Each structure stands twice: as structure tokens, then as C-alpha cells.
Length: 282
Ligand code: AMP
Image (cartoon, rainbow, N blue to C red; front, side):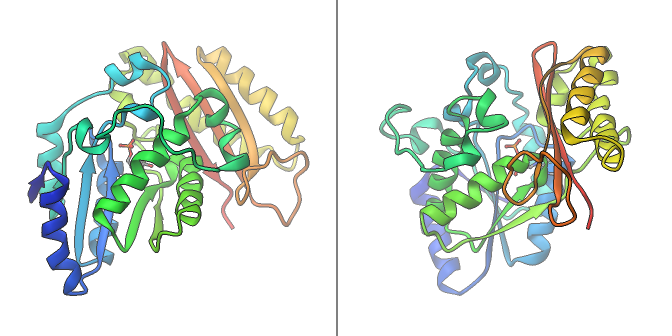
């Protein structure tokens, strides 16, 4: 694996590859890698000739400074995992490389409705920060296909919208959520959970499945209220338990045959905020 820290070196290297018409896949990450990230790397490697990954903990997408400061950093292990997964290129920039004119006063993406709900409601400015960094990374790497995880369902929609707005000619591939054996969605934040909270955390996936199983018994609003109470009883501080149209993220008031629901939860255990979702199978 070749590691690049500077945009100019990476671009020079990629130019010769792009000129040969080799298809490039890109998997951006914030490091603290786990098998969920590696599943994206594996899919990207299988479907493309060359794989570029990046590790960059993006300051502009953290609305909570302490969450940014405490974000886990495991670079040595990350490099080992990427090498084992046959990642060809790792881009490992410093903040100044991505934000040469500082962290303030960036372009505002007209993301509309999908930025205002769920994560957008609880993490002000988060998705603008996500768009800034991903847009910048896409302009640097110029991949054919960008690989994202369904674990961050709303983020996938936001990035697709940003790609549409900026008219980038890049395909998006979305990988399934990888889970621990007890159902907990793999996440870099899981390593910050206490032993007791780690035992409680799978309740999120359990609750999502409970929500989906209630479709023919309760109305969406009742399901969400009940799910929120279940999370509180288990010791979480929930931000939301929601049922939305998987295509638009508009809340579902009534189930109907022509709307596919996505069930989403965000909830914290001792200030470690976890998110997860499941989409109703076809
Ligand atoms: P992050 O490092 O958290 O920014 O995640 C980098 C990419 O990995 C994003 O596209 C995530 O959606 C994806 N990802 C994170 N967790 C998982 C998981 N458990 N399964 C599959 N993909 C994931």
C-alpha cells in the first residue's frame, strides 16, 4: 500500500492510472477501522481495478468539540487492516491539506429537506461538514465509484444529493451494515463504550427489529413512542426512533404498500451517541 499525505503527490500518481482508463474506487473513512469499513474495502476491490481509501477525522462535521477530540485514533492498526485487505492507496492528509483557507466560511450546499431532519435536527451543521470534506476528497481522488455504508443511511442520501448538486460524474455504491454477533452495528465509537454499556448497546438493533415487526399491529407514531420508551427503560438517552420513507426520508404517518419504510434510531449511552437503521426487505 502506498501512503500519500499530500494532494499533489496523490494526484500525480492517480493521473497516470486514470490515463490508462483503470477504474478507481474510493472508500473515505475517519479511521479507527473495523470490519464494517473492511467490508466496503472488499466490495470496492472486487468491483474495481484500483482502490483508494482515506483516513481523515473531519473537524467540520463535529458539532460537539469533545466528540471530535475523543474520536478514536488507531492508525497503526488501520494501516495493518488496509494492507491485509489489499488496499492499494491510502490518502492520509493533515487538516491544512484539506482546508488550506481554514475551517470557517465554506460554501453552503443547498441540501434542502433531508438536511433538516433526524441527524440534521440533532447535529447542527454536521451534513454541511460532511459535504465539504467528501466534495473535496472526490475532487482530489476523482473516483469512478464512491463506496458508502448503509449504517449512515441519511449520510448516503446527503452525499448522493451533493453529487447531484455539484454535477460530479461519480457512481455511488452502498454496502450493507456489518454487525457484531449480538446485532450491534459496528462503529468506531463502540470502543468508547463502557463494558456495561457495550452489553446494553445491542438493544438498539433489537428495538429496530421490534419496530419493524409492529407494522401490522400499530400505527407508526405509536411504534416510535413505544420504541423511545423501551430505549429510555434500557438506560439510553434517545434522540429519535423514527419511521421514514426510505426513498425520501419523509416521516411515515400511515403504512401503505407503495412506501418502503426505513426504521432509524439515534441514542446515547453515557454521551456515546450511536446510530443504526434497518430498511424493510422487498
Ligand atoms: P466512518 O469512518 O465512520 O466515517 O465510516 C466510513 C464509511 O464506513 C462510511 O461510509 C460508513 O457508513 C461506513 N461504515 C461505518 N460503519 C459501518 C458498518 N458497520 N458496516 C458497513 N459500513 C460501515
